[in-house]
Length: 129
Image (cartoon, rainbow, N blue to C red; front, side):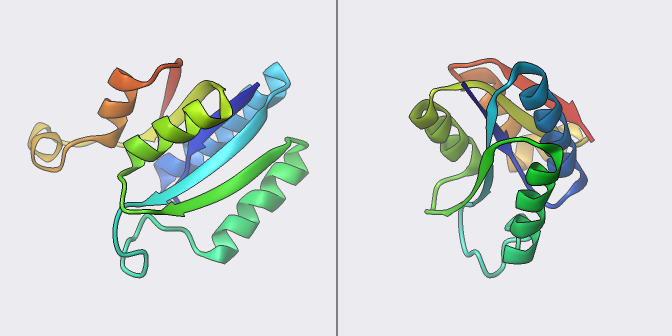
């Protein structure tokens, strides 16, 4: 089976990756690490650089975890992409990172994490950074 992890270079993305590695090793599963931008990849602070993605690949290899790293910039938001890739690979689990937000921040900006938690067809592990 496969675990899908939403990854950014921010603390919540790194926390999700670390927990996903633990889960993959514990259950003998592979990982699909997703970094997603829903807009202009040149200006999106959540879009990882190629160096960042290579560091993730090296980290997976060092941890002894089989996995792939994918970066998607197709105009869809992270929740849509994570759900689609999870269905595509037959994921057994989705791992996402959370950060603290004010109630107004959640209302104004929406929450990909909330949408994933409510809509995913497989279990979701939410990790606080």
